[in-house]
Length: 465
Ligand SMILES: C[S@@+](CC[C@H](N)C(=O)[O-])C[C@H]1O[C@@H](n2cnc3c(N)ncnc32)[C@H](O)[C@@H]1O
Image 1 (spheres, protein in one colour):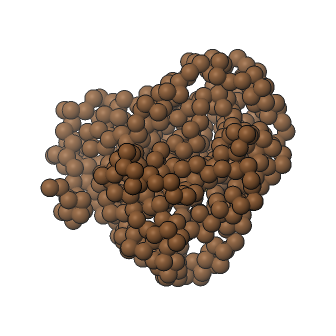
Image 2 (image 1 turned 60 degrees about the vertical axis):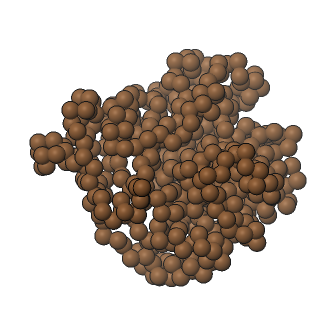
Image 3 (image 1 turned 30 degrees about the vertical axis):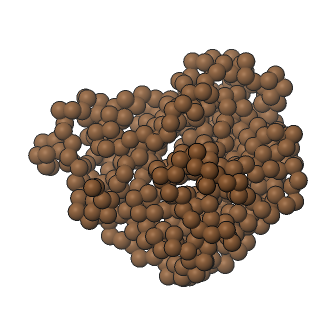
């Protein structure tokens, strides 16, 4: 029997056989070596080690911020029970963290794919859901939606994904009007929508890719649980989509891998984070999408009024107390300050969710997500908004997402007061004991040893017609 714990303890090295790599993969290996991530060192053949080893070098474990840890211990042991004990051990040992590699469909990735597979990475998303989405966009977009998208593009508060022309860092960034481009773009020449993410069963980190002048990046590193809100959103080709809290842009990129919307509006009010978002989009998306993927700078709370009933889908990946990073707040004072501000977050989150529900068309869908375990920022926010938004109807993601993906993630249906039983991987969709119709306003991914993804909460809400 293979034990994950034993792997962590004993095994630090993965051997690569260079003769099995294509020239592209070997090139990539060398290029990765030059830009290795913090905790992986790639040592290509004949240079440093004779055996071509990808070595996992253990980082020094950083001490957590004590006030934040104490606060989490108190809150999460109550909310999650025993699940918190194991989640805590994962969050406190960054050497066990896994990383996902999302491929970019807009550039050639064969070499990367081969390299990933040779290192023991495998794809975790079923392709059938995504391939079903491929259709003739012009026939799937209603003329009113298409017209609405065009109208939106000409509205004054939206910028193209390229910053204004005078500050545009890409030489090929055009000054064509977005509407002209939307009309003339040969959409069906875009590669087939395909959200591909590779994960490794062990904490092997694939190095981040350096900037490649004139070329798009081939992959984006992320916590694989970040893809779940995008899967839940079920964007169809030709839809109008709003990513209300968008920077640094990981989920926006995932949406563009998953489908080809008529419009993806990426909103981010913070100027520095918006720059980061624009850079991410520029590094991964071709210029031909400039008119479809736009960056907006509003306070997300305004969309419900300024863009009422406009979008087919809205993602609210809300500002939250990011448990992973807050645990490593650099000093106690800052940690205490964050904890004070934490109490204000649910009010902002509920305002953003209400705004999203107003911005979505009747029959459209909003996904609310956070990367915290805190029930007051998760279930409580959703329930508060459901109480005062009668057209909003929560949808059950348990059978659609939690059960099929339970091999990879640990989901908790835990709802304060409803017990804390994580989903067992052996449970299949037909198991009626799991699918009993409990009121589940969302699902929570809890990091666990060997499945260190999360925290990630997601809830899908449909606006009634
Ligand atoms: C969790 S992050 C989003 C991560 C992003 N969706 C991704 O996948 O890369 C939340 C973002 O919300 C932004 N934010 C904060 N207040 C906001 C507001 N009032 N309206 C919209 N966005 C806001 C933050 O600046 C931050 O960039």
